[in-house]
Image (cartoon, rainbow, N blue to C red):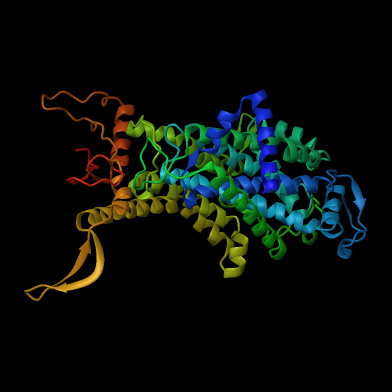
Length: 546
């Protein structure tokens, strides 16, 4: 007891000493009492955070042994199959880390798996934010920060697996150099500057090393810090539930609940990555051999998050344009620009497009259910399908070999599906969302099926329904119907045209508004947080503009 009291007095004394000088006690108490909502999907962001921390820890350890040099050496290490082979110091040091340094292969694989998990978590987190509408005011800036983190993750992953200077990473760098050269006017100069001369050049690995271990991690760390500070300041969104409103936060305090939960989550993720690194081999560079520009490996694919660009390159026809003595290589430029513009550019502009189309300027702290926003959810699934088709196409050689399908047949299938797939996904998802809304309407009107069958006096049979509880009604009633703007060309009772519907932009906005408003809307009691309901009416927006 005396030891505990002594420790408490020591901590109190240290805290008092710090508070006397920095006056941080009040701010610290407020931070410790900060309430965060508790939902499993909110942990996706923490997976990305702790994966990045593990990347920093393992990357620092690897930096002690990796030699970022393309100077030629003759290998005489543990891996006998490459003994006597001339290779770069970068590749030699990678082999030494894998076979000669105790625990080196384990740390290398933890690092690679952590990079993949970071991108998986960032992608899943962004999808959760998109489908629930958590990017809306006042969180547009944090949404843009998330897109920047995803983009930097793509670049960091590309530069990271290019460092070992093996045959696989060298082939990826060759594709990267070709993409740079395909950029009009500045592409050739950019590639020449980055590679330090004609490909492959000798300074490329040291330059990628500096970018990989210093510049890009620093940018990612700064953006993650800004992301967390903005989230802390604006408060976290929460799911629609009983008692949850736009003006409160229902959950658990930062201390001790979320702080201890986050620590446990870190160790769980680290343990999972260690198990993966132990039993699941990834990037065995010794099987590929040192890089030589004269050779290319069969069945080579990049990490999954780069499959978008690789697949786009594989389905693109060999188009070129000669203009004023300059060659514009569309077969490289289009696969580089179009997928990134569709995915990243579309994601960045979507919050502002949705606000423009719906006219919604209010703040949102309650997440939408994906079914309650059919156009948004359908657009997200169309983007996922677009990404998935190109990702699958990045392995078209493996698919052709294993399923005995001609390679060019797969290429043409992908060329069709990259356009037809997103359109079909949009239509199907939209109809599913409308159907789920009708199901919600039925639950509110008739209650939940109990499974009890009762016979009527006239001999018929019916199933008994029970009314929904307040907890069950709350998420259904929290739905808000989008506001309808005047239809293009509509007039009031006096024949006066509706304001701001005469120009092309206003008509386009009105049509987009009708698309967003296509939903089964409820007219609850106005509280939407599980309080006793009043009368309900069901309205379906007329897409024809009535």
